[in-house]
Amino acid sequence: MDTDSQHAREISGATALTAIFGDPVEHSMSPAMHNAAYAALGLDRRYVAFHVTPQHLAAALRAIAALGILGVNLTVPHKERAARIISEQSAEARILGAINCVINRRGILVGDNTDARGLERDLRSRKLDLSGRLVLVIGAGGAAAAAVLCAIRMRAATIAISNRTVSRAALLARRFAPMLRRRSRIEAHGLDALENAAILADAACVINATPMGLTTRRFAPLDYAATPRECLFYDLLYAAEPTAFLKPALGRARPAADGAGMLVGQGELAFELLNGKAPPPGVMEHALRARLGR
Image 1 (tube, rainbow, N blue to C red):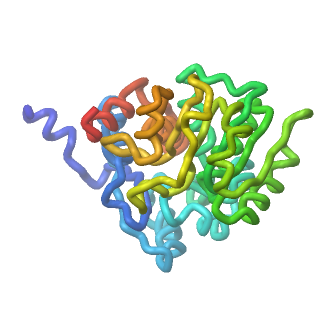
Image 2: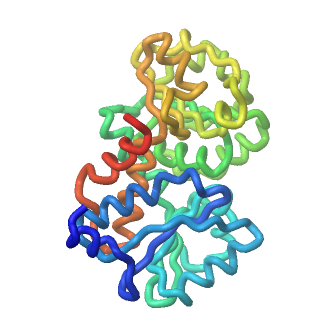
């Protein structure tokens, strides 16, 4: 590295900071993506990762304004808790009941959520058409809520939510039912839906919005062969190798994608919120793929 490049990368008293709060946070790819965009734009800004435990989240959020941090991203397990702390929120954050991006606007913290938009951006980039089709969402937590909102926006005719606890799936279905278009429907099922040929035969996309395969070596029983050949299997998790959810799909010649594209999409949107300008096209994706060895 030459002297000028070395100097450009130094952190000084004038360097502005953005960050991510998580527990754990050491694995986060966000610093690599955001810092690559700062370097490409020549901005004297840095994105850092802070390990923030749940009991310290409120204090950490208050510190954003005190320290002059431009804003932060939030990851597990802080998104829902932050929505109960931050009063100023975007409509999207209120719909999802979760915040993944906190913007410091002259000392006032504003919460937003870019997860559903990030997922939609990635699915559309894959030319996936959900109009009039069925989407099966596995899970009933915050990630599943983002997937359901995305499916509604992409005009899915039927959204089937499959969760170990059916009552939680039903609660999520009731939350989003008022947003459905005419002749569309949302259904709640147990995990038995993953082996229900009647549901799977109409699926245009199956989305895993659970940590299954990350916290366990195996995924729940799922009849991959019952899905149409063009059905996309999409895991919100991402890893260097195909996840336990995606491996069987690939083995049956089904299209498959992990959450790396969603991470890039929501990250690009968050970058614009935090910095007031969009990152250069492709820079954040290239940085992520380099870290994943792709």
